[in-house]
Amino acid sequence: MKHRMSIFNTRLFYRIVALIFAILLFVYVNFGHLSSTRDANNTGTGTDGMLMSTKSVTLTTDLKVNLDSDKYFVSDYPEKVKVKITGPAAMVKTVQNTRNFDVYADLNDLGIGRHTVKLKTSGLNQELNVKVIPEEVTFNIRKRKSVTLPIQVRYDDDQIAKGYAVSKAYANTQVAQLTGAVSDVNRIDSIVADVALPSGLKDNYSRSVMLRALDANGKTLNVNIAPETARVTVQVYRAASTKEVNIKLVTSGQGIAGKQYDLTSATTKVTLHGTKAALQKIDVLEVPVSINGISHTVTQTVQLDPRKDGITTVEPGSISVKISVSDSGSDIVAATTSADKANSGTKDSGSSSATEDTTTSGTSGSTSNDN
Image 1 (cartoon, rainbow, N blue to C red):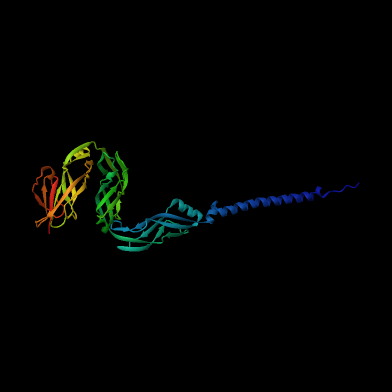
Image 2 (image 1 turned 45 degrees about the vertical axis):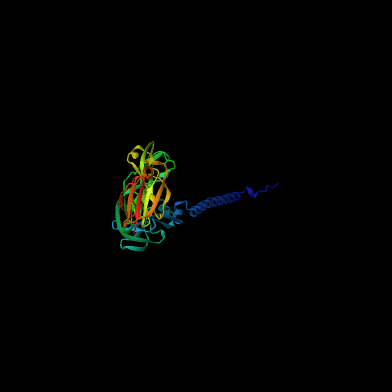
């Protein structure tokens, strides 16, 4: 029987199979390399990818002003601006991490007044595309002035617990320097540290507060304050002492011309509660009584408020005051004082000239207003 040779047993067959496997292996290896390169270029994860790709970022930074600050004061401009930076991803990433650049306005060649200036940048590579937002800013340049004023600590007495009093309120620094435009500095009336006390305060309280410069109407002025903050301490003591003192009725305000006012009250003494040190400083409690617009005899209830550091309460909290009004024959505004009519039934004479507020001694007094 004649033997038939199969093609699968020939050398040619094996060579063909080996070639096919070689081609497949080559395609597999090169396809994986091409995919990795393409992914790196698309994502920018590789160094070459980051250099070839473009990145954009918007950063917020301080706006610097170039000007002779010893002579001039600049206001009405934003303290911060935005910068949009576009360019090679690696460069943009470096700028984003280091923030090693400045945005500034050059005002050295400008005079007093309002000026609109285009902002500039420094410290950025020229290959980067930079856009400042806003591109232009208006500045108000004025003459500069500095003053030093004492710091006033202010707080709400109503936050102090009943039976307690403030013996002292002070800041860790006594003065502050205020710098600004001459027109603003000249309007400064006071520099205050307003401390918000917790309700029902019984212990010493301390905290840092922002300082404010106020004009005579209590409006905050646009000036620089150094230091900007002060640490305020409010010392609170239990007011265990009491003291009985005489009251002194005092006319307050402007009465009607041609009228004479006489103040009397059945209450001659009150009891004050406070610290021992505070009570030692007071022997008479003045009680202001308003005579504004009063044209006939009336009786009013007047609230008593000592308004002195270390004094917490006064008993009674209010008294009844009779305001007697009569026609005056005097050609000047006068104030006469009298003893307590309720207790003595007699009136001591005495007078002092006044034009507005007049003071009476004891628990009664009279004031005359005339043209």
